[in-house]
Length: 44
Image 1 (cartoon, rainbow, N blue to C red):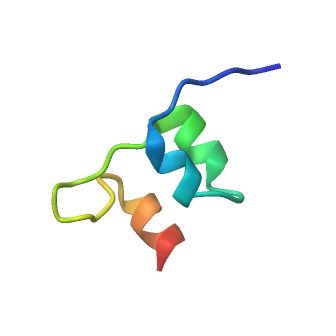
Image 2: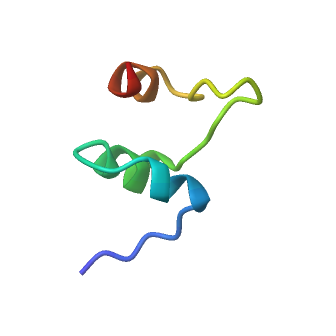
């Protein structure tokens, strides 16, 4: 079992991209855009 500590963003971001968060972290830009391009693609 893999336990990964993530921020409060976890509640608003579920589904397949949870895997991306587990590996890359839930980093967000101040303007609300995801710091990583694949996160932006996943949300849009």
